Image (cartoon, rainbow, N blue to C red; front, side, top):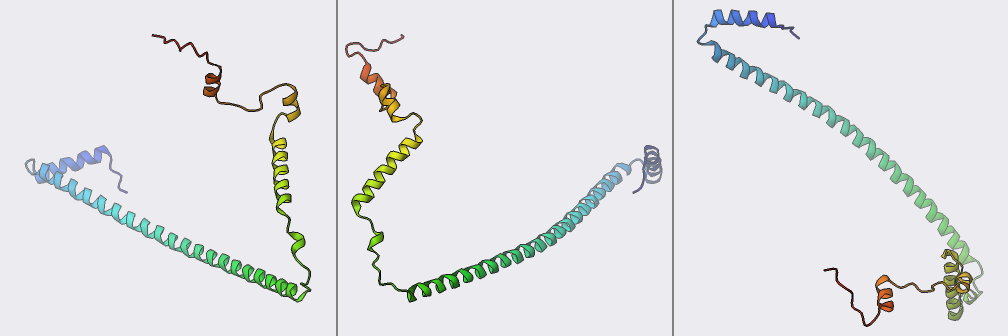
Length: 167
């Protein structure tokens, strides 16, 4: 780049004043400024276009890499799926060739036992998740059922008195 100091710019200005003349100098300076601005904008546009092209090229390369990786993953998943389906098919064919004369009713539970198991599960779950044991609550007369604040206020409010207003 050209190194222009203040002394060199002053010398160029004096030469331009002598050569062009004082009446045309402002118009020529304005014209030179606009041409210099156009040249800077053109150079900036070219730089931006080149950087966009470089970025697009890198994005295209990245896109092909991602597509290749996705294709590899898809192939491995399909291969795994085929292996599993072959294993299941062979196991199913082995199971159908075995003796199936035994009834399957031994695995089905009656509805009463299902309900009993459900209720015991709930009771056990409550015993596990509760922080204070049930026997402790019943021995120390703690509340078994919690009610909301407004319900508690309605339960213990004196019937004859109305709330007194502050104003």
